[in-house]
Length: 394
Length: 230
Ligand SMILES: Nc1ncnc2c1ncn2[C@@H]1O[C@H](COP(=O)(O)OP(=O)(O)O)[C@@H](O)[C@H]1O
Ligand SMILES: [Mg+2]
Image (cartoon, chains in turn blue, cyan):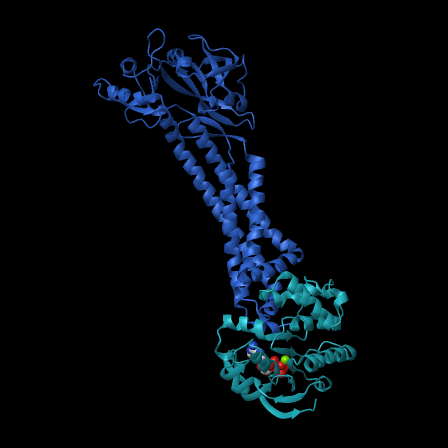
């Protein structure tokens, strides 16, 4: 109780003298705000990516690729394999009794970003005729569905927003083929919204690559996955990997989100070291400016713990202000911003930065650590001050 | 009479660079309750050093320091600061008020180390300020007060917790003659009417005249002990 009163009294005096130390204190606040803003906004990128990927794919859909393929792009399935997969166990059937699946193939299209005209690689996905049964989340929001055999495409909402030349009626030229945009679709904010889609058979016939890359099947239920997988693995005519669609997309984003997180922590860490030194410098000068006061209080009987705590409290408050400002900046300027990135075999992917409350708390925790590290040595100096000597130095 | 302060064969050395310099050489001293002692001597003779030992601000190199029944040369640094809070009221040459606090808040500072309630603290602060004649300046900051007024606030701060011993290091050293006389009258009144034991370092013979006893320190040795009739 007495201890808290001591700490409170000394801390109160420190804060009342803060106005005389605004500029040095601002250095700490701004420095820490910068660290937290960078850390939080870069991490928001990986959080956003993970969120987008977690939205992509369902538990009751499975994706089949050639054995050993890491991604669809490096997989190939010939027509015989595709036919065998149709007979797999546990695939949901439509009203006509036909299995609901889509044999798909992908091409890279070179497009330009609206933002800065830079060249990007977008995915053109060739899909089967049961696309809309397979992916009920896919909705045409403008125009209409493509027709098979006539080089028509539909474009995802994000792709339409980010890339040039994807309005309805526009023609996208690639490898001699002219694709006409006839519709715009959304898929509930998942990764597919960054891609373009057309009829798989048309795509294959145009560049005469006689193979699919993957087959995605809708299962009777999530629990049917094991039966489906087993039936394909035990088929001697097939050599394929079967994964749940959701797992596949999570796996695809993992490397990229890890890289982004590492960058965030490395850059944030380097900046944090700088901020620790700024805080150290500020708190040292705050202590030096008050040596006489500290010595007087010590003479009157205040303990060294009160001195340590009051310096730490000041550093912590400055850090908290900085941390809160930094987190707020990240949230105001970056939350919901879209970025596009390529990686993980996904082609150009568009997703939203997500400055979650957890991230903001993480940023503020970093701020506090910086504050405590920066305040610790000056605090110890205040506590160790030889009182008799300091009282002489007027 | 009981000795409130007893020093036995006290030495104090400082290390300057690689050299050890002894500034107090075997000092023996006894101060009784109710005394007003003026410690005189030329600059550099060790007055402040001796005062700091009596006040528990510093530890002797050797010898015993017994104040208010405690061997303070044997106390740890932590318990020494608690001890100071209980027993010592400080008056400094340059007042050492906290610039951000008002006069009354400055006077209240030592009471924050006690378990007194807020209203009790306020009452005592008011009393102390009245005693030094500054009740009407309670809300002023130190930089809004004259030197003499600041020193009176400092005296109020020194007596507010009713310490066993008042120690003053050159309390009039920064004041003009008239203010110095006012301060000395105040200290003398505290000694006479409230029976406060005071140890005051000064090199001003005029200030020393207010004391009941004069001691001279020369190059780290006590000489010439003189008592005055009250
Ligand atoms: N912390 C210290 N380190 C080294 N020498 C000191 C220290 N404090 C005081 N001294 C020396 O001790 C001597 C006595 O100082 P002091 O007690 O302040 O004298 P006075 O108060 O009588 O002027 C002086 O020579 C001074 O320089
Ligand atoms: Mg001195």
